[in-house]
Length: 123
Image (cartoon, one colour):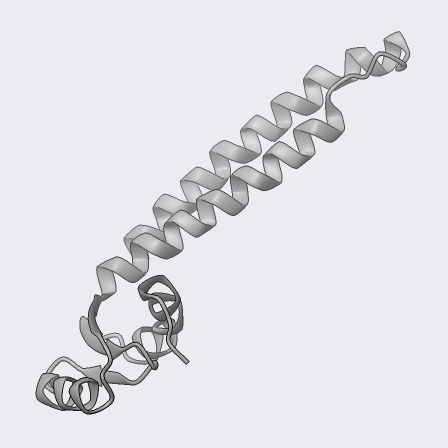
């Protein structure tokens, strides 16, 4: 089974999180991972099996996971805002509460962005 580079970056979390010293890995389309000093083995494996190989760095993994965190936080906030927005059938009391709830969700979005920045710096 062949995998895309994005799928392989996702799978590389196990190796990068397992050993903090690893900064670079080579991976073939069939998801065989090789350490940075094993490039020849990776090339050999990929030519024998007629596969393409990729170079994955820790920075790519951090960037990808930060993007995923931000996307999931944004989706969650959008879902919550849709639930909170006033509807035409709501009473005036409920319409008054809606802006407060929306402002809380915007604060939650800011907190999520701050958390993502924190995670980028710690990884």
